[in-house]
Length: 318
Image (tube, rainbow, N blue to C red; front, side):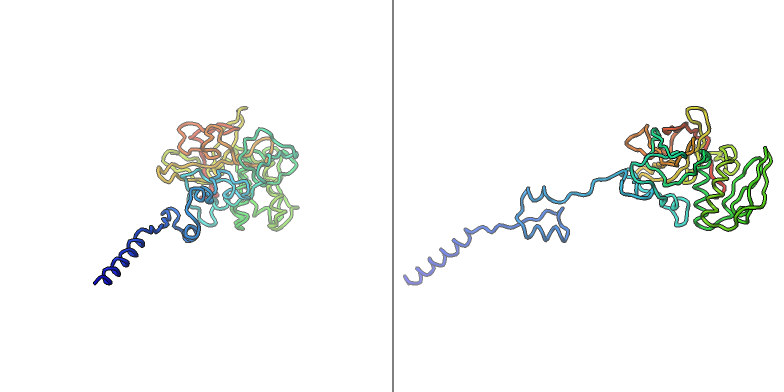
């Protein structure tokens, strides 16, 4: 009996000793439950120092200096998403338009730089050495290049003078433009074909004679701007500080994910002839280079002022 009692006491001592050992259980935060994070947490001691040294997400960048196209360079503000752009659309074309390197100055036709351009990005455009590609020419270039890349040559056409139809398709048949005062007509002696060189020759001739007034003949005025949503390719016509007519094209659109508010990017050319560029928004640094689409009366860019009633849509995009 005494022997049994001693055995029971020994067993009780072992049990009490085991209960006295406290096992440390590792707790993994829910926020770290990704396969890689969980594996790392299960292998390393949990400590505040380890949490602080974890990799941080890449900071949001409104302008990505490494981006080589409009869409890759300029991101919408946080909380906004670019509107859908159908493949082959003008919006998709502009988003893929190549840009000059980040920080590049706007070049004038004579190779000099324009210091006061207020440009968020410069389109990678090679100008001729003539002072011809003014505000209307910059708009005509983008529309023409869009159709040229899709081989829609018949869509590349602009009205010169009173009603002369200056089209690339006719130009590619070996015709040249003959201008004598107010008389405009075709004449023989030109290059045939749709090569890039002949297309550039066509544009350089167009730039010489196109103006904001003649460009209007190839645009449709938006009669009710409040009821007609802004779309990529729309052109605002306004005035610069000297009272001269200027143009700005809507190059991209984005929508607020919560409120549905829309914002836009604007491209301007200018006089003297210069590379077209995306304008900064000096009136709203938190939104720049984007602009609020819902402006009430007038919109101001670094170069010009635009009236809400002077919004047009290119007929070639209808």
